[in-house]
Image 1 (cartoon, one colour):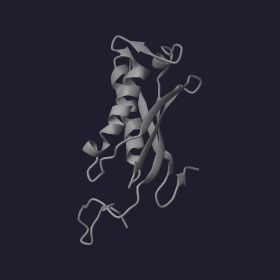
Image 2: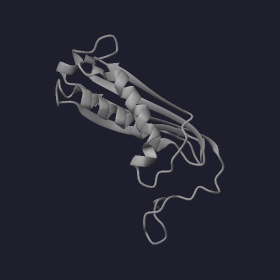
Image 3: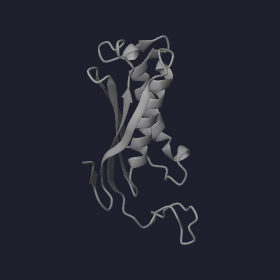
Length: 157
């Protein structure tokens, strides 16, 4: 059953009070497809615009988004992040960028939502900064790649 529903099927925060504090990690990715007009602007691993360097701004926004996850996702526990790293990997041949977010905490609950939020907010920031060039940007394939800690680890196929 769903963990965020009580016995009467009402929304409820999961009680983690009796769980042990352990190291938790998560790795999520968001893929952004770039139209040719935007891909042509990629120089030395960055796209510069009047608003500033897109990748660097998206990295900062992704970290900020991960830190604010519990403010955005109802019933999500606020977590102190030990680390949050955003990496943007351009693939010019495919006309895509992959935005990876790796988050880590020592807590009673997992950090998957923080990694997913970080990758997604970075992708949205990329879109916001690049939309002046084209609205043909597609954010796709946002997913969890790996998590460790807690009851069971997970690794995407």
